[in-house]
Length: 297
Image 1 (cartoon, rainbow, N blue to C red):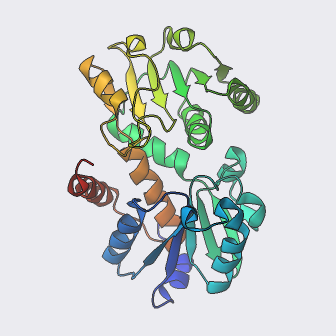
Image 2 (cartoon, rainbow, N blue to C red):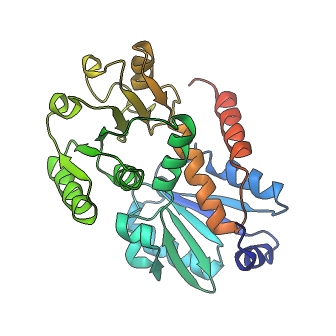
């Protein structure tokens, strides 16, 4: 539902200013998605990339950038790697979801106050349920317990996952997240360092690490561990057809590409920042068109 107050605040600016803070973000499709959809609602949104790779201080520049955004009068910010946790102490308030996840990917700026939100989990859930509405959640293996993995883990618990198995290259991180999640729900959440054991009897696999990206090609696990009965969900969307999805499709697995989460979290962020109700189908079509126009590298 539209927020009349938020819409009035944003629309009162000639060119409401929104930004994305992160490292290596020049190829992000978020600016195009936000500007196009906002325009469809009569809002002339200007979206600015703030790439930490272009600052000699890197992530250490974050406090200065947040102060500047407050002073300049940004309507909101999207936050990505490596700032989702680091931005928290620089904000005035957190949504319940952001506090539970310990990570922020969206900052709403109103009346000089900055409030952190997290649309990663809800965005992933939107895309997943859109693609596989009847997926078996009896035993789900989540590969990756970082920022994206944590958000997805929370979403899976809200969706009623039976058993959630966390696997990470840093076993201590998976164990810590499992303990945190188990204490907050009645769902069985366990950490497992052995992928073979983790996938035994699994109904689905969610991949939430950077492996498979253009800069980090390859499979995040041995292909021999995949089975036709598994559904496989990916978070990587550069490229959309990762090595994992190609392998899974070849075995007959039902799959969900990373573009669904990219669109879902953008929808949630735009809703919060601009106070409009985005057309999800239109944003998804726009995203797919942009990806097709970009073509192979």
